[in-house]
Length: 442
Image 1 (cartoon, rainbow, N blue to C red):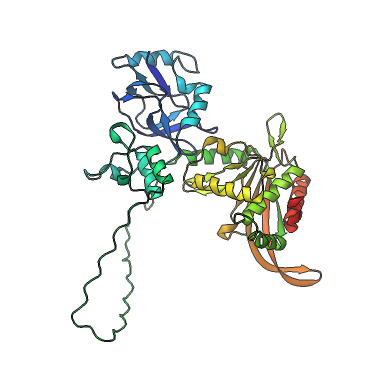
Image 2 (cartoon, helix red, strand yellow):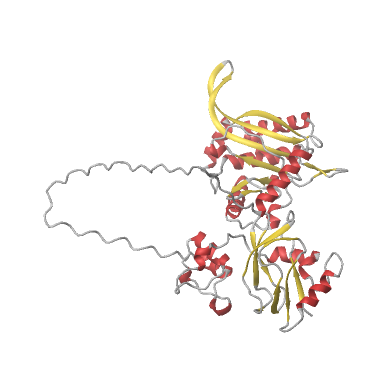
């Protein structure tokens, strides 16, 4: 019997998937594990793999958004009646008819594990390349372009020698660098050259001519990505559902600065101030479990594990990879994991399980010179800490005016879970740890 393929849930917050492109055409044979299409979710562009062997009998949605569990294709034996299979599937229960593998919970779990890393869709101009271009999937081309891999040096393992994602990943691991263009040959020297050349005259700066189109609207519109849709929806729900209040304070980072200098000589990695803040936050959360909690509608969940989410800016939005059991990790372990997760986030290669389970979130804009800002709580957390830059400024200490390294932080709290005094006590503990970071060792 023909199998109906439905849109799977590829992330915990996904409500619909946007079909970007099909890598198989109607009438083509497919094998289990082969990539059928590229689907943009709220967090990444992922590959949708087939669970079945057979022929792609019908593509229900060529491109565009499809709700979770919506029918997108039919796979079966050549000549089978795909219309009958769809009619039977639509006449079944809400969970989908028999054979709707991607609609079941088990199928969703398998699909989330099988989907490939995120990518950007290849530009149409690439499809119009010359006859000498290699055969490669759009995802493989995107990964290769980002990694600087020349596809001419990659062997394809797909149908007909087609280069697929795994081939490019192997090339990246082997550090197959793209060949560098040969430098231009030097111009031949003139027959007669003066003993001492005159300094070249400065060229007049070129001015871009002013252009103005009157009488028409002057703007550009672009479609909203699934990621941006989800960010807008979730943060709007958070802002307008959770009653936010904000606690701000300055933290003297003098001793943290000294510690970081000393760690350069003993730590296997280069510890950053962000690593120190994350470690201090985790230690403070262990002492203030009420802040490490979440609103559950009819109850408050007090989390026993400390899993700190770290906000990472990406091209089309914001991703929050999660450091699990943060309070149990060393500064070096935190440093390595943050770098790894941030790198995956910026390449849109994070897996769903790497963005789930957060109990608290840290958002740091200090590296951009921002001294102070407020954050919107990242559900299901009850709080988010906004961290600003470390700035040298005058401070009064023992009756003297000195120069101190001051960092401003703002704690956004869900008032349904955290009261003012509770949040203030957490910030006091955080400041105590960072102002005397030896506490991180005890």
